[in-house]
Amino acid sequence: MKNVITIFGLGFVGLTTGLGFAEKGNKVFGYDIDKKRNENIAKGNIPFMEPMLDKILKKNLNNNFVVTNNPQNCVKESDFIFICVGTPFSDDGSANLDYVFNAIDEVLTGFEDDKKRVIVVKSTVPPSTTKTKLIPYINEKYDFNYRNLLIANNPEFLREGKCWNDFINPDRIICGVEDIKAKNMLEDLYKNFEAPFLGVTFNTAEFIKYLSNSLLATMISFSNEMSIIADLTGDINIKESFNILHMDKRWDNCNMKSYVYPGCGYGGYCLPKDTKSMFYHSKNLGYEPKILENVININENMSKYMSDKIISFIEPKDKIAILGLSFKPESDDVRESPAAKIIECLSCEGYTNIIAYDPIAIDQFQKCYEYDYVQYCDNLNETCKEADCLVVVTAWEEFGKINSKYCSKKLFDLRYFL
Ligand SMILES: NC(=O)c1ccc[n+]([C@@H]2O[C@H](COP(=O)([O-])OP(=O)(O)OC[C@H]3O[C@@H](n4cnc5c(N)ncnc54)[C@H](O)[C@@H]3O)[C@@H](O)[C@H]2O)c1
Image 1 (cartoon, rainbow, N blue to C red):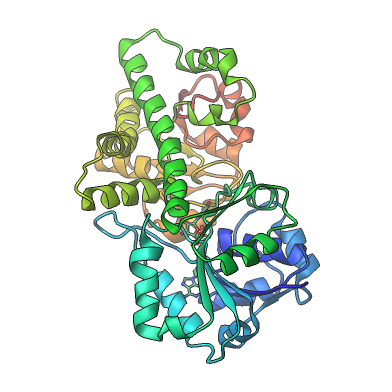
Image 2 (cartoon, helix red, strand yellow; image 1 turned 60 degrees about the vertical axis):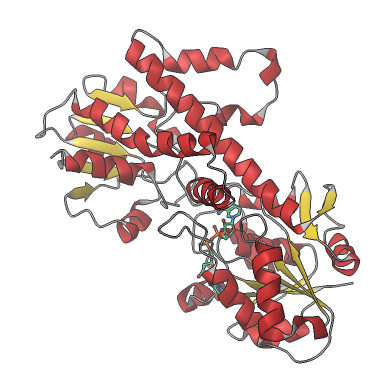
């Protein structure tokens, strides 16, 4: 049977989820509070760079996938309401749940009837949020006990740049469900996915997401700390050392290898905020997590370490080319981008003669960061020719030949990739 689903939030997670369920034959309504984003998607345009989504949107638009400006009407028809809004960090590092509460308010003002519906929180929220915050909020404000409303959480593990493939071919589907009806409905919704369906408690589902992201961040910070020790020791080929480490057969066929590799720090939307939010969550429980604290500190110090290293080899008048602005290749996401942090560290020391290049993320970067001293160039060769010193911040494949082409220039490969 075709399920009817409304998605709140059409970002990386919400749009991919909506299109994924539409592709699987469900009827999906998508809604984003950002009117421009809604309009663009309704015209068939994906608001960010993400392989495959374009094609899937065109195929399903106004058929199985409909963009709506009136989510309340769609909620009335829906069996599932997926909350996929952002959960950015607050100033103290805790997860800001305002967008989740606002979305829940929008959902719950939508109907009066007793149809059975599941509200599924897909946004990443700290362990115990559903139990100690969302359910009490809904009970108190909306008399939840008297409605046929079910609640579940369903953390998402997709990676930007691989959203479609990761959503449609998940390793496992984890649902926090404490009600057999919600569990059965979700298991049925996911029955066409070839992955184990794991129904666990609310807290367990929320915890697994943080467990995963905290581990990934830890592996990266561990590698970065090791690379600093190697760098300070001198005469150590860091790239070679990590590649030889990975030749141990215990790493065979392990996709996690790329996380045990040094660079200039993790960025993007998830790892920075999820590690901070887990740290804050633990501190609130009375336990100060030592490893997480250092994972976060090492990451925050990487841009300073790298910019100090660059500065020690150049003069303030030298032109520095920042190559790569997105937080990782194949993506135009510049949130918490290491490039921005390195530019800021350089400028603090008076090194503002900067030219920047990225194959796809220049527009997003300029929208997010206002550096009037940075010149942007949309051509890699022109950027490199103009600069005295080349700094590779994102491991875009097209940077692969710059060391042989511009061997007379000072080169800093902050990703150990060349
Ligand atoms: N980006 C990832 O790789 C990734 C992976 C797994 C999990 N997550 C988690 O999923 C959640 C969403 O992440 P994202 O990257 O898709 O975020 P995003 O910023 O790309 O998208 C969130 C969208 O929600 C919209 N929104 C905010 N309030 C709304 C409301 N009341 N109603 C409707 N729309 C609303 C925003 O306008 C925005 O377009 C976060 O909690 C994140 O931690 C993200």
